[in-house]
Image 1 (tube, rainbow over the protein chains, first blue to last red):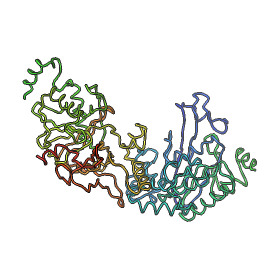
Image 2: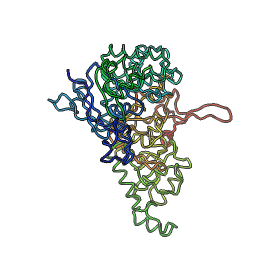
Image 3: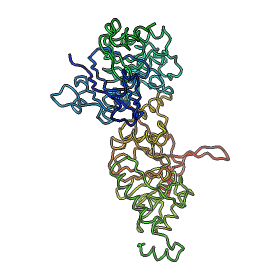
Image 4: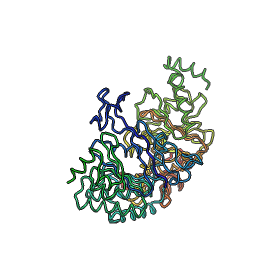
Length: 291
Length: 288
């Protein structure tokens, strides 16, 4: 089976950068701040493959570059360097023709596309759920409108059909469609998170990016949101990229896991393996400090 | 009148030292270049210098600058303010252009070669020989949904209009229909969303595939844009909520017209309502 998404050497520097930035930072140096020029190396030379219908976890402490990685994959932040390729099979035909050669199973490097094309790719097959619902939702717009925004961006022009779609998605995420015309600011944190998930699913994405979705929710709500994600993943055959600092979440959702520290991948493999037999010093610390 | 006649008259009339058309040739040239670009990219807002005019910004200086850089001495000018030929603003602009450019003045839509207007398009269908200059207070149709100019420019560049559509969706959810009565956003040539200036909905269909060139000038905001003749102008609408214009269940009290945009007038003395054509030139012609 071929990967759905291939990421190669993703690098993101905040600062002007110098020739020593990559050598002078990382887990061995125990810093991500270049001592020579003061540049923050948020993410350096990170590569991964994501297979269809797979859940890949990215774990690490705060500041380890996991969110940066997701933001680059979602084209929100421009990568300093690196490559991102999508399997042509999952793209709608017109986009596939634009972005890939006829005999090449993968697109050209998506990170070099214009932001217009990147938005087309994003609208066609990506969904994103943020830790903070304020980032993913318009709090003053109705919940149905939040979901419709994605559909409007994809060219839907029928109010009735969009409302039907929004209602069915809200039902899937366990929010009463009767409340679809209320703005998410009226909702509890867990409900807001579920509206965000419904919005991310509106365009039938192949790839769902989850950035610390359960952080900040109380435990029973966390469990329900995780259950929901798991069942949606099965129902829609989604590929998931799950970012979390919580090994419990990773353990529950992910088949494969990458451990990040100071912007580098320090260890990657099957989740069970990493949790039972951690190889890297940092991973051992992480597993040992689990409550 | 020829240019020489005007120059001779101007020398003796207290206009000595002023250039033809009040603006200097460099400023007129800049406006014309912006107009050419605007016509070449229908609906795109072209920035321009917008120097001081002898009326305050916000009182039609954008339209005035376009008019002044277009007219030649044998042009015939009509100026209307919300359909009315006789309002103070319209009369002042008319007198001013007449004085500094020697053009003839008319209230007859058919007789005019250039019409400058605030917030209305004349009822009579204009021809390909005529130009309509619209005064624009807010050129950015996306300003309602996005306060940042940098962001709206990006949205236009990438045709990222989901938020404008979302605004209309919310309107329908809240009120059952789109509640925008004037400045109704339109899509030009299938590419740019454009503010048609504060014309009523009634006038929006007149922009579509017209014979006339429409030029839009926003003096305060320093933007010029255009709708060339025979260009698609589509009001934003949904498949199940089509665009509608205003309905008037009555006829004009004065001329009996049933196919024009009507103003409601309330008599202060007895509180009675009556309706009159907003386009006074049209009403006069029908009543004569």
